Image (cartoon, rainbow, N blue to C red; front, side, top):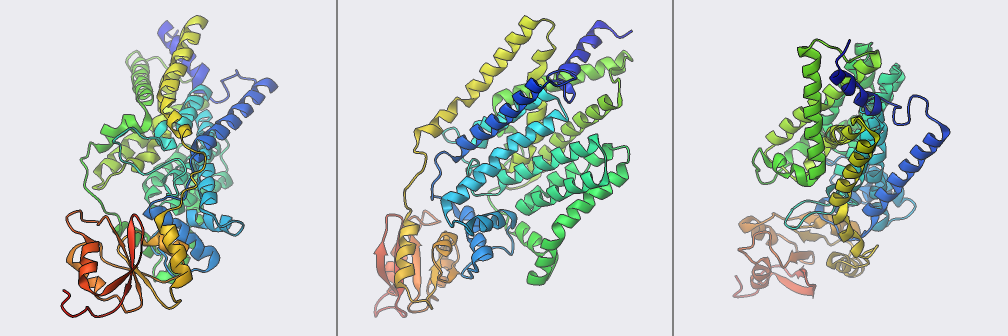
Length: 516
């Protein structure tokens, strides 16, 4: 007969570790309504905190996806990075732009995509770690400050809430793929695994950097009784989802993998230490999630010790066996993913977003241990402590609501683009070394790229034909030099108009007599 300790450990699996156990074996209509209300509230609140503060002020890469969307939907040919950027986010924007071409609408679209991630994580969690851990994990993903785009002072990171980058939408697609794979494991059919593979292909098309995470998820079909059939169907779904894009790449750029290779060659930035992500883990996932992760690790190690040291088993069914295999997979995903991202030379906080599913699901399992406490009073107390800890880490979200719902400000680039679009001859080109995607988006004028800094930049400036426009930012890429001063001294350009952050020149050709 199993020991009392083992029976207590079973109680946790019964309460929170198996699908459908949040309300007991037979879910009532009231329980179903409760889940529906929770999911709706999770999405609505998650969307609100992400959409709040939308604006037209964005960064380089964000403007690229907007411009590529116009290339797709509207036939713009003045600038494109579709030869090395993933296409799916731009395709979605293009579909939206057919009805309303607005930066604000693009922000709302990404906020919707990002708010769906906690919902899918809840669905995936109910099929892997149980309803209570799934609820905790989904709430963490919905409201943890980093995932919303609220960062502590001094923490450098691109936005994640309504950012127009692909990181967060790719996370949504990744979690969708995880959920579909877990559904397929419950009721294995080739079609279910194939559909899961399609969703993983969409994840790759959203962000090429998701390929390692997709490769990890393709280990899940091996848990199925018909493992090779399931794996083949899943890989077939990925291949079918990628095939049209790879064919397009072959027809337009000369190779099926040309865009993928080109994307990898554009990855650049400062080299960070290998402990970078460990150092920032608490900021990204919150201290509460890290504590839950450690609790889960300690609990599961102690459970393994009971099983293998005492020789007592706790798995009583095929379902229990599958759930244990999924938990092992989550730990493997976390360990392998952390190793991979730590070995990357260039690192940014958002790069670790693909590890959110295993981290938060396991953290939810650890924080849900209160459900295994022996008395109702202790369980209620534990639940209140977890709720209080979550509220504490969510407090920084107040900063989001202290800003206007919509930032109606207009950037210097937009103002300058209006002038250029109305006054520059159609045959002229815009030359610049920085932020050219935004001018490509707001104008129809051809964009010419200059070198970033140094002598190469100044040599490129000398090649600007007469009549073309040069755009120079007051703050140079290299703080030790002044691009404005060089242009003014060259005698090759005439100032047209000035803005707080940039100056627009017209090329007049050869320098004046005596000019350098």
